[in-house]
Image (cartoon, rainbow, N blue to C red):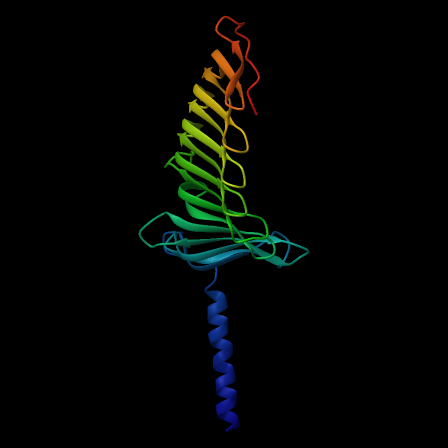
Length: 236
C-alpha cells in the first residue's frame, strides 16, 4: 500500500513538473505555443496569462495590474481560433465591469458599451469603424435610464443631428454637425418643452437671425448675418 501511495506521489510530481515546464514555450518556428504567463518585472505578481496556438492567441487571456503586490484583474480578452477579433472586457479594481466590446489589438471596433460607476446600468453605447474611429450612433444615458445625449459620428467626427435631454426625458437642445463643426439649425427648449431660442450655425459660428421666445411669443431677435468673422461663443 505504501509503495502504491509513494508511486502516486512521484507520478503527481512528474505530472506537475511537466505542466510547469510546458509554460512559456515556443514551437519549432519560434512562435509562442501553449500556456503563457508573465509577471511584472522583478516581482512574482502575474501580469497576464493565456494560450497561444503557434503564435495565435486562442481562448481567454487575462490581464492584471499590480496593486500592493497583488494581481488585480483589469481586462480579459476572448479570442477565436479563426479571427483576430477579441471580445474585450475592462474591469475596475473591485471587479465591476467598466466597459466591453470588440477589438483587434488595441483598436476598438463595432459596438462598445460603458457602464456607470458602481452600477451595472449603461452609461454610453457607441460604435467604432475598422480604423478605431467613432462612426454611427452614439447614446449617453443618465443613471435612471433616460437618454442624456443622442448624436452621430462619421469617421471620428460629430456629423448629423445631436440631441440633449434632461433627466425627465424632455428635449433641451438640438444641434446639427458637419465634420465636427456646428452647421445648420439649433433649437433650445425650456423645462416644459417650450421653444426658448432658435437659430442657425454656419461653420461653427452663429449665422443669420437668432430668435428668442418668452411664453411662446418672440421676445427679441439678433442678426448675425453681417457680424465679424471672429467665432461667436457657442450656446451651452
